[in-house]
Image (cartoon, rainbow, N blue to C red; front, side, top):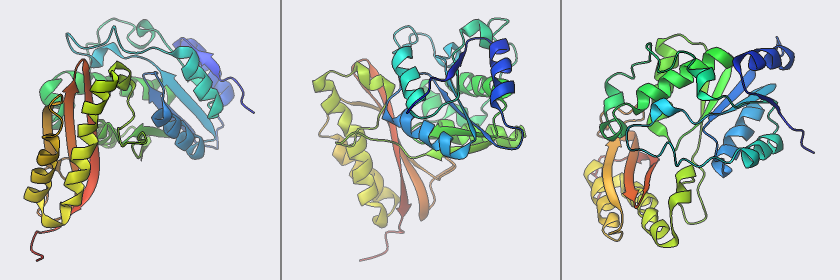
Length: 287
């Protein structure tokens, strides 16, 4: 049996709802989203339900993380279906503000600088993206005041940067990352998959196929990983790759051996998609 979450549209409504919903002796979990929910969001909400006595989700398409010419106006908006998912997964509160409730003075003059990592990987192609992401996450944390917040590992660079922001700014929220949810054929679930025609969707499979090829070669070391992933991409001419990089788990340079992360981003028609997988690098010395 599900119950409809309380919907808060304004800051004042959110404050009033949280006074009633928050238990002083039990954790409050928060799942920030931009809506257009799918099974990946379902996993985030389910984890949030496990982490907190009270579960708050937000549905807010944040304009400051979209650059010029990006898909802000086209981004899928499916509020009724999103609300139904939040209800099924036990959310107590859904915060669904308009931009003027988050950015009361218009474009913010005070923002969160993501540091050097914000200009790498995704940041090379979306130079203002992570400033917008971290600024809105900081604002939402200030409004909701969660004990724990849940993010997906598909947006791995975002997860690393949010953790870094929380640590360096002493925000006091514990960050939980949830493994990427995939479709039956390995394609990472994304709200932007809605842009894919059947032919384009087949091209998009190159992202996950390249990652899996790289992971399969991990025992042979860094060069073998990138060579195998690159070879797999040759079968997907409709996929334009922005980057394919091997990094450490905190997105510094990849180690010679040990735990690492393989990250990829590319364009398929109007859709720009990202994906990543963890792997354990060998030193390539075994015969």
